[in-house]
Amino acid sequence: MQAYFDARETQSAEDRERSLFQRLPDVLAAAQARAPAIAKQLQGHDLSGLTTREALASVPVLRKSELLQIQHAARMALHTQSADAERIRVFGGVSTIGWGAARRVFASPGPIYEPESARPDYWGFARALHAAGVRAGDLVHNCFSYHFTPAGSMMETAAHALGCTVFPGGVGQTEQQVRVMADLAPQAYTGTPSFLRIILEKADEMGVGLPTLRRALFSGEAYPPSLQAWFHDRGIQGFQAYGSADLGMVAFESEARDGLILNEDIILEIVRPGTSQPVAAGEVGEVVVTTFNPDYPLVRFGTGDLSAIMPGVSACGRTNARIKGWMGRADQTTKVRGMFVHPEQIARILERHPVIHRARLVVSGEMGHDIMTLKVESGEGLDLEQVAETVRDQTKLRAVVDVVPAGSLANDGKVIEDVRSYD
View 1 (cartoon, rainbow, N blue to C red):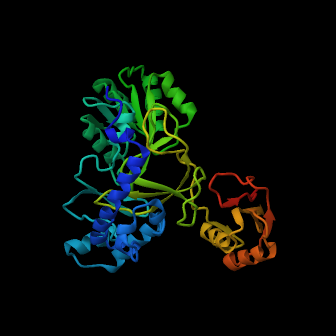
View 2: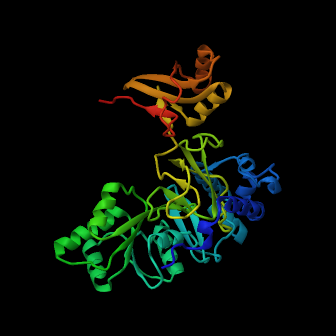
View 3: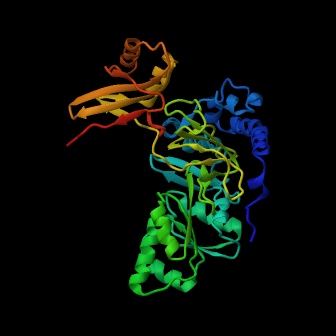
């Protein structure tokens, strides 16, 4: 059995980095020519010079909330029915393809609309399926939704790219799912781990064995060690993949089970929440991804998810960087005394006072009696009164500034922590 999906999975980190950044200027130039929203994001940047991570970090992050606003504004502003105008109206000037070239269009909550072209394995999940042990000739029972959101299509197109047959099970109808599995004898399952557990428990109630089901690729939910062990006891090896409707597959788990390995056709950064600036290696921050998808070329797209880069490489032999997986949400906006406080405001406070190494705004107290404390790890020379004034300037609220020992603030990506009691 072929161990790796392709040779790129075991190339040296240096070769991979060189290849990605050699390709990047041409990818960005093509996006600039066909996607007006991306052209605006890249305005003022010499694309030929964006050949390092440091250079790429000068491009502003485009966050999911902004993408929603861009698409909504385009739909409100444009009414012409020319092909290019319709493409811009629907996708907000982010997609390079429109009707005809787009085989399907999906709607994520918001709504945000995403195209799918006819390119094989459009969403990039074939690599994750292969790492989960799925091979050509297998039957995959796909229990992701086939309507509105692209999850069902993500797994189906990946399975087809590997040479598999797919049963489109979708969600719900548990008893019927069991009977189909018993009749068709699939080797693999794709869907959420919780739904597969429900199916297997229903099969037990019905007295139906499903002995052929041995592999699973999960996404869309947490997959804790306890659930992994539960499936293992039933003879099923389940693996997880992390992706989104905007980006496709971002990272996947291998048999080493030591973090999630990055997909090959992306550049992933971890940035401080509310900013465009990458954090130090190993620090938790927001996942930001640049894709090489010519049809939907997102550049420095802020997912809103928190994670961190892991040191070293996987024990499975794949050499790409790894992330720890989903560690929470980066958008920690909190309402204090009737005012919204945003992570971006905390970032601006740090910019004003570079002697501060790390900060966290802790909101405590009881309902109606909010207390803000800015905890900071700082070098020498910090003026607490000036910092307090900056907090008031940025948030229009008063806060206590508390200097804490270096390394005492948790490395969890939080810059705003709400510990208020509502009892």
